[in-house]
Length: 240
Figure 1 (cartoon, rainbow, N blue to C red):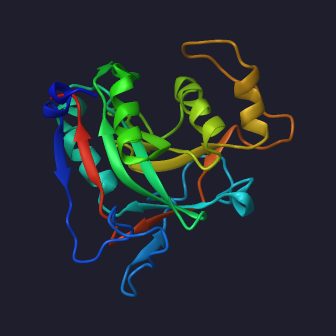
Figure 2: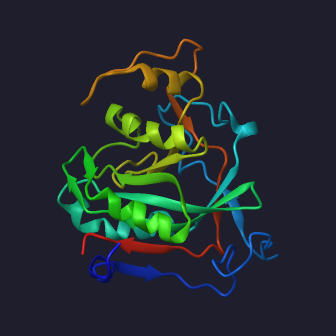
């Protein structure tokens, strides 16, 4: 990426007294003893979302840690779009520590085109360059539903599919500030059921999907994502 595009980035860094991992720490660094780590299941497990909280492949998936501030900070920087009923999206990059745990350290907000029910990243090569510079793995994405409930639309499922093909642990965060029952959810395609449906689907736009043959939901809540109170992360907003 050239220096001109680098100067266009808007960065926000969240310093903490102790970090895990820090980019300056070797991959064998241990978590500080006083770190607070908690599983994420969303705000309210009631409601009409029909899914088992335990991932269909949870025993095979690596653990992921995200900052406790990530959703709130993303919602804050999405505020102007949300007030206009426009979606906002971002890409999550992570470091893999000790070959067993991903730590999300970077949130990139790409240039994008948005409507009330869709968001399309543009100039994605800028995001790829940032990930390459920092040796980051693209473990997922986050987007708002400014006036809809917290769920994965058919377009969301197709957007997420290639992430999960590349990285089985990849997840999608949906932030829905107007949903009283669940203001956010962290989802993944069920595997193999949901992945098979999306692999075979050739439709685009909003459309229904058939149910997986194995009886699983097409997507489900993640059970391997945890909030980490001491995890530092950086926001790079390429829209500026």
